[in-house]
Length: 266
Image (tube, rainbow, N blue to C red; front, side):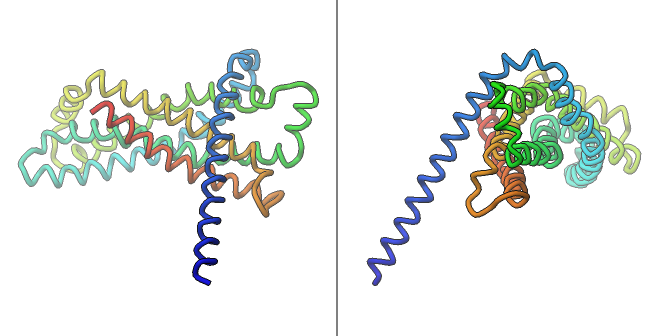
């Protein structure tokens, strides 16, 4: 009996491993085909503009609000900690480097995924379930070039810009906490920010934003594109599950990629 139970567990584990390997292989192939289709998408200027609007403009309010309060909280917490050592003047340094190198790219990417990424997965999932993608293939139109490539181009533009907005708003929030709410001189804060930020820090911020944008766009599009493959699910449930998977896995990949990039930079 025990041998049969153990064999069943090993069999289930093997099936799960094979399914995960197949999923990763499908994602890699999907990413390669999507990247190859970007060249053909240059003619779809209207769709690129629309994708940039959906990913960029619609996310600006939530980016600014969250960034401002992130900076406010960060300024308060850092000021309290630095005051223990008599180093309140370093508040601008700590806030700016924390936002530029880590919190800015990571939080901005997660916010974009939560709003634009989930919408992307749902939209493509609905198009798959309503056979619109099949119709594109019937008309000899590459679905990846028409649906995914414009989103990749938009991610290359939108993620760095939104990350910059997040970082700037967060630094302003730190200044409000340190100088307007607390007692730190404004000149001391902004001088510390100016001295702290180096070109290498900005390059790291932009690199992370671009990498996060490409990875999350591919993951969200892939989950929507393969919504019909969700075992035991169909219709609206499959689309909902795909959107959820897209957000969860995008968030995990953002943190993993952040660690990998940071380990090479430090």
